[in-house]
Image (cartoon, rainbow, N blue to C red; front, side, top):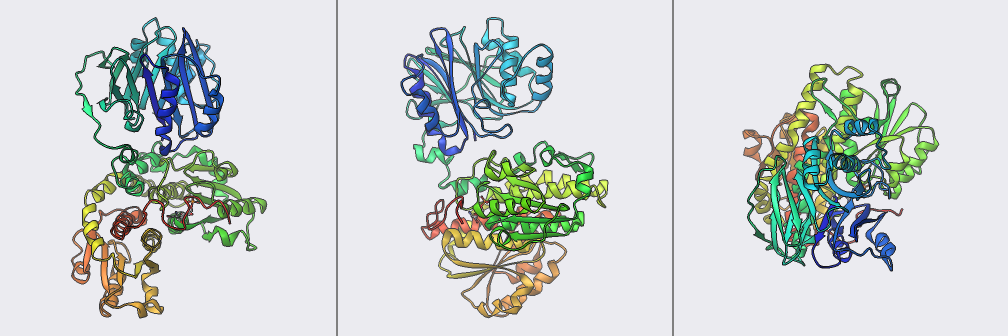
Length: 608
Ligand code: AGP
């Protein structure tokens, strides 16, 4: 996620900004920049890539000045290039602005400004906002920012300076955090407490719709319509390490709890309720091209391969297109049948997994058209595909993938709708899916509020040596994912299996020491999975069942149950996976494992 930092006071701003950006590196970014007011001039330095590249450019040429702003950018649209890096300036080049969030009506504003002779050098919505502030500027930066923001729709956290108003920072918040750091004879601003805590623990949290004007001697908070606002000064209690995890003990837990927001971000701007459809420009596939797809192959690794399996169920059920799922490491060395009517979809959180990239290149060589469902903007896989959809779930730091999985499944649901509504899916069915997807973030939140149930459940299973995860239909991949989560962070051997398949061997493993986790929402195969649970119980197996409310039948059979809200059958894995993520997390913590960096594992396997 992007990082914002600003300083105004007696000290040189550049080193303070750079250290502040370094404190926020953990959030993930792909370019960085600073702007400093140096004796009436605005000096900007920015670079694509990691902060070290920018720092290298400053060696021996550090801008002098005591007012400045700095930014690390996580590209959500517009490649991670130097021209797209923040800060951006207005037309005059005397106002600089940095921004977190998305300006929804940036395209319309850009058109208006272009018609008035403005010229843009980047693809970003941020540059449009900088030009809009400049267009309103008549000698008062605070009022120019307020006027510009009254024309803006969308989420933002911004920080603005002007060469004509030294010693002034103007900030505003609507959806993206902005925190004021109150110092002695100096003031700071940041999007994350980690950038402030070494200078001051006295902070003021802006709320949505508020602005602040900071000078070395003080600060003032107001609304866009200029009403003064009194704000309390809070004290930062956390240490730096805890701040970086947002108060969570591990990044993995933080990312599990981010899923309502990350899923919202994945779907933002794509769901069309009225037409029961989706709008995903990134697929770069018009209706004729979509109708021409005769076969789909989805290729991925690990957790991404599990989401691919769910995609198969969705696409074949709703779009009636034959879909195969291939381990990328197998696909790349087989002699797969791929031709121009084959669409190959590569799924990858990192966009750098070597096997997935190799499989993608092999598919392209054989003439397939390709799509990517990728989280990291500008990653290798994202650049190799013909089109695709960015997950936009923010950087995933924990090695065990969680929020990327639910975002991948949502992305696959959107791709499915794209095809299905060109085929037999009716408007009403399309609307039903769109409405069900719009409800998912709040339903995940409802599950997260009962996380403590899983923490206590984990305690009684932490000494297990094996576990079996069972699911049917689209929840068989959810069972696979639950098993992978448990084994990769707690080191307990766990296997996912189609529930009915258990009779063909694994049932020999069942005894009173074997926890059997059954994913059993009230879907089309619910009755069948009840029989499987009975078979497990008949052999003394300890059953933990993920169920919907009111499922008395399974509650009678299982040692423990966890309730998830109801949704459409094909969307249930987005909900059933949450307790599986939490269960594996709490078991791993109870076993004292290194949850964020499990042994032997890397976050992105960029080698064969
Ligand atoms: C999942 O928890 C693991 N970290 C791993 O299986 C991962 O999903 C796999 O390596 C694929 O990574 P990618 O999505 O970045 O391609």
